[in-house]
Length: 167
Image (cartoon, rainbow, N blue to C red; front, side, top):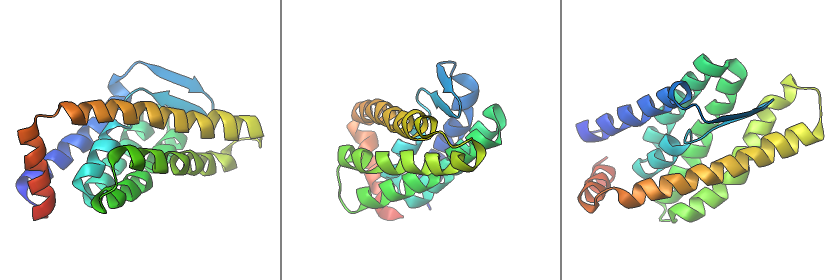
């Protein structure tokens, strides 16, 4: 990994750690929580490759674990797998929008699986609040991420593409 890619990885990981501390717009309906923008580093990391997605996912798990506790940290740990799949699909040439659509149900399912052992089985809380809530949150953050990526200057995007190809 070259220096530029390492620096971008560190910045995305730092954002993933800091967002749970800094963003006050949170929806909490136990066992579900949604922090606006918390998936944005994960989505951007997908563009840079699997190793960046993994590091960013680890940062997300750390940030949420420290702010909202181990169960939410375990849910955020699923960002590793969602980001990893997304990065592999982007690497194969799939569009960002399609990747966001494909990874949304996986994201919801993984978070449902994480919380299932820790809550009394309640289909509504698990499937609707946590599963569908995660999918909706995923889609909102994917939209925000698409806007961020769209407004990155073309010269920076070309640099990111070079970084991706050099690795």
